Image 1 (spheres, helix red, strand yellow):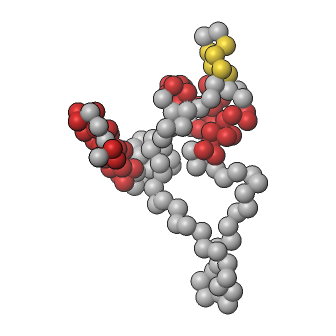
Image 2 (cartoon, helix red, strand yellow):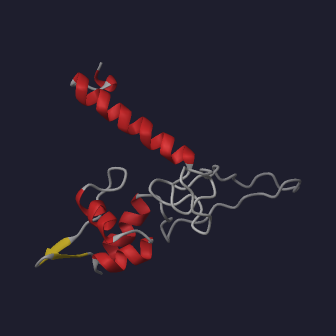
Length: 138
């Protein structure tokens, strides 16, 4: 698979896929092989990366059964709640309206909570870089 094909599948730019290869998404790099001036990604590596980034579940893993409210059988495992917002850098609402500020229904901005989470992580990294150590090392 090429970088352009991955970009179309993920609905992101070609440059974003190149960042996934070089920097990774949440610390997980997309494995790719350099062929000439371009990158080639095997389909198996792409699927493994999507699973590692929690974009999809492994095929062998059974889907959890969620019990209906008011049902007599309460022994079914309850699935953990999914986050209420799309992870960075996905649009908050792909079919939403164009906005100039982060909004839950924006097609050009991520969800406001995702922005806040990203801002907090960037601030933590900046403080760690300025101090020269992380809080976990103390």
